[in-house]
Length: 235
Image 1 (spheres, one colour):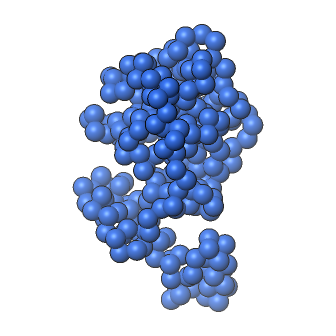
Image 2 (cartoon, rainbow, N blue to C red):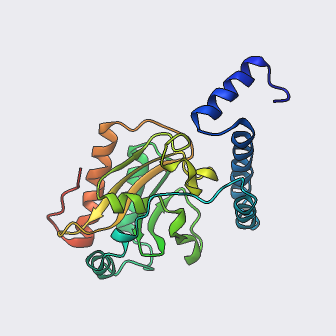
C-alpha cells in the first residue's frame, strides 16, 4: 500500500487475514467505515444514501447476521412489551437517571434503555445520542445490537466488535457506531425479554465481571419500574 513501509504492509496483510478478507477489501471497508463515521459526526443527511450505495456496490455486503425473528415475534413476548406502555412514550426522568448512572459507572460515552419491537428499536432513554425528535428515538431493527441481547435472554458482551466473528459485519459496526457493547436484557416475571439496558463505545474496550454486575443491578431497577418488584437479572 502506498506510503506504508514493508513492516506496515506486512502488518496490514496480517490484519486482513485475521478478518477473513483480502487486503483490498479490508482497506476499502476501513475507508468506507471512516467515511460513514465522518458523515455521522457532521450530521450529514447524505449518510443513509452513502450506506445504501456502499452496500449496493459491494463494499458493505449484506450482513449474514443470525435471525432473531422466532424470539422477537413470540406472542407472549410481544404482549409483555406492549403491556409496558412505553413504546413511543415521552422521556422519563427515572429511566434517564438509570442510563446516566450506567454511563457514569462504566465510564461509557453512550448508554441506552431500549425496547425491541418486531421491526424497530425504540430508545426510552439514552445518553450520548442525539434525540431531538421522535424519529431520533428509534432505529430500524437491522441497526439494533440489542435485538440479540433480547433473543439470547442473557448479557451480551462484545469487547471488539470489529473482529468479532458474528458482529463484525453488523451495520452499526461497519459504520463505526459500535466498537464495543455490553447489554443486559430487561425481562418480566415470565422471562419475556422486552428490551435492554446497555452501554457501548465507538472504540473497543474490555468489560469485566464488575461491569456486568453494575449494569445488571441498574437493569434490575429499570425492570422493577416496568414490571414491579421481584425482578432478578439473568446471567
